[in-house]
Amino acid sequence: MTTDAPRSPVAHALLYVLLASVALTFVMPLVWMIATSVKPESQAASQRITLLPDPASSLPGVAQENYARVWNDRAVEFPLYLRNTLIVAVLSVVGMTFSSAAVAYGLSRVRWRGRGAVMALVLATMMIPFPVIMAPLYVVFRGIDQTMESVGLLPRFESLRMIGSLKPLWVPAWFGGAFNIFLLRQFYMGLPRELDEAARIDGCSHWRIFWTIILPLSRPALAVVALFHFIYVWNDFVGPLIFLTDRDQFTLALGLQLYQGQAGNTPWNLLMAASTLVVAPVLLLFMVTQRTLVGGIASAGLKD
Image (cartoon, rainbow, N blue to C red; front, side):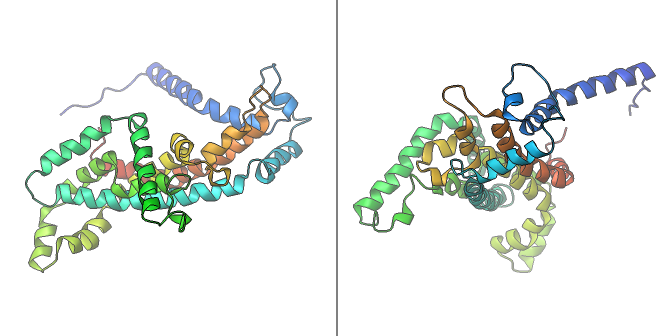
């Protein structure tokens, strides 16, 4: 058994200075973004570097005007992009959480030949970056559209079209994710086997064991999967850039680029105000659920 040696006051002070420096480094871009969002355009575009806005000409009227212009801008329809992002996020999170849980149950609680090899194959897919598969993924969805056109479903039922719609952004989530399957499998392997055996004696099928016993017990791990995937979908830029062709279907991450001027006339105050509105839900969600997030990661066996 080992015990930690007491630290000297100097060591404590150095530790706090180090932690404060790291925290300041990470929080500074966020502070800069919020500060720029409440500045008038002349201050935001000024070559003079100042963190805080001039109180005589900035607050609170300019801040309110910046955020109102972002919300009501006809060229960048923020409320529409917010609705599209929420649709993709909700459908993706529900699909990813349920499908990953079902696959993880089969790989951890059901004994069948070859499940180790299948798990190794699932883990191997984690080494494939998205840029490698984005072109084949586009070809697959394009092939689905061409097949539907050949049998007469398109353009008669235009709502079934894949390319140019939100479907390619959330449909793949219903087939699980390698990291989420691994995380949930680790959690399920820690649950007592006696729960399954008692349920089998009572006549429960695998589906009923999964639905009525395993899923309720795995709420912390499911919350981690849902949070991780929500953050990924909310910030995803490449996926919407590939599959969306109409501005009416843009997501928030894709809509932000519309504030970037092609000739160097970017309205930085509006871009930072829009960025603050995009980041705010993620920060709020993290602050509300951080205890569940940490507890879920610890219970899934990923804690050192």
